[in-house]
Length: 133
Image 1 (tube, rainbow, N blue to C red):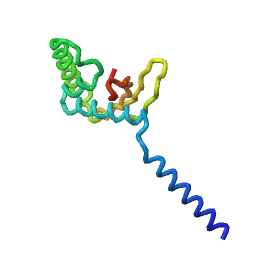
Image 2: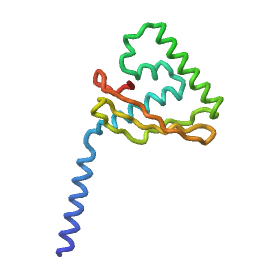
Image 3: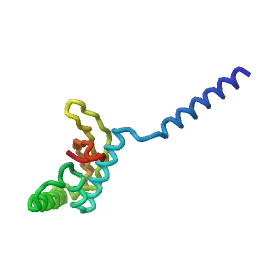
Image 4: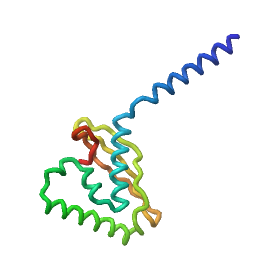
């Protein structure tokens, strides 16, 4: 009888923990997901969407915007030549840096030649969204 009560209590506790964890995603998870979406756009060649993922890009001159779009395209071409392209960008973790007021998202870059590299993407909350700094 006592064992049954303990088992039922543990099951109830596990259910409660599952219910609580179904709540809203953490700040870290939201920043990681936003970074993943922006870098997925870069990987797909949607350089405009990648640029739109940066904070304060709505106020830059059109000529600078065009230069950035060309630079993104050149970067991806260089990665093709150097590493047989980028296969994926995978966010691995995020750390809140309260001193700099940014969320540092760590991403693994997986290349076509089987090499990998970790990069850090600083993210900020801007106009209610997580955006690249």
